[in-house]
Image 1: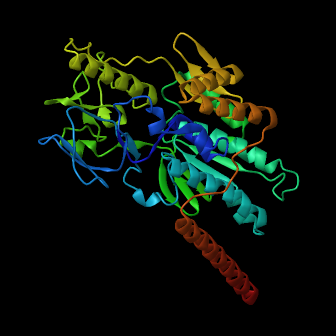
Image 2: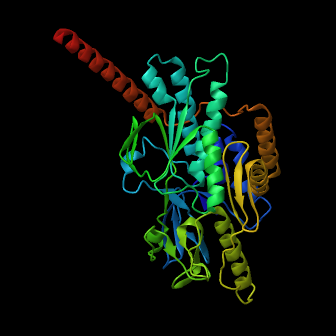
Image 3: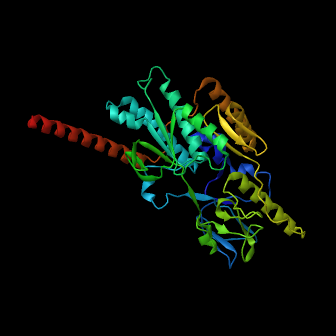
Length: 419
């Protein structure tokens, strides 16, 4: 197993690390610990630079010799996309990796600390404004979590921010949130967001992101903290494999998830363009990836044992879940739909069940229980982040603030002279 990180990350709860509800250790586990009982498994830390299909070998950074393979499973996931506006990235970071979560937590918590000491009311308003871009599950869950965190921060009596107003805005380019859910549940999710104080803007494609905020559908929204949850693109696996890809960069695969023309290479997860027998494309979500991984594992075992292969891969949708804050979630199992507190309990039970490791399950359950009963956040620490980028960001804010003061003074002086 080759990975750029030495740990497995449970991404569905990554936003809770970014909003100080959980610590990173609660949702991550070293890969070697996960496979410690598999004596035939070797774990390598490195970055795949290329795949040579002719020599059946993989070139990995920090590994001197190419790594040969008989069978290869490519599951390199997806990377964020700004739809041709990569210059927005410094202002609107994404939530995809552990480093992203720590950096966003740094930025969110630092905004409250800066607002605590700044005297300018307009700048304080910008610091207490947060914009989440993207109306999918990540965007909805992030916006709700920031609103909950803001309530906890502003409820501390001895802070100067006590009683101040925090503005959290969720911006979606489409006409509705959570397109995978039925309309009735979407409306309940929107109501829960608005109950938390989140402003939901739909049919508002983003036209600009900068240090002052965003422009969406022609309207300016001022905010110092932006978070991008609007979309992803496939990794460069299609280029490595010299394979046909769709418009999103996903590798087109056969019905058994193998690469066309090479039955010894399999592509799964966000990297793969998979079509169900009903003609619909399999969504790039965690349950689909798990089913694809289990399918390829069974296929390889059957092939090595000389048995007939399993039937063509078929994705089965067992349900969709999304949470909004600490007490509300929506659940769609098809045959049963839940919302509110009961939905939240179901959502929590499902996520705890799929966490890897007994310790992680217990720690997350206790953290949620404590947070639910006390509204306290245990991981409210300002750590990590790109210091050079953050310092440059802070200097830019100070410089812009000083320029604004100079312009205001010059304007007042001009008015005085004119009078």
